[in-house]
Length: 164
Image (spheres, rainbow, N blue to C red):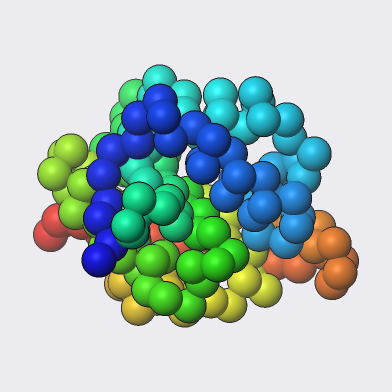
């Protein structure tokens, strides 16, 4: 059974392991693949983020953060980032976290959610976000330097959380 809950200090090592494995590949996040543990945790667990973990039988299988996409007049739109452990991929963990994030964003008063940079070659993420009601509202040509494919497009994806 998968449980999604707010992260606490004792989750730091598991979050770091997942973060490091995902970011080190360099194919899905516009973060330095050599990001240190200290910098990674400072970024992921920043005070402005709400951090959650997905766990099953005491093992953390994924993590996500939610925050305002912009400050001030743009703070009603949420932004989120998701990471799933390699051993938990294709088991519905990302989808469950995505559903949870949409509910949390709504509960916290956000009116929409926007992803600023979804790598177009990350087809599993693109499909998941489309399944969860996101549409591509923009394409940034060559905006991501993929380690194997060179410069690839990045997508801006958006979903309203309440009726306009």
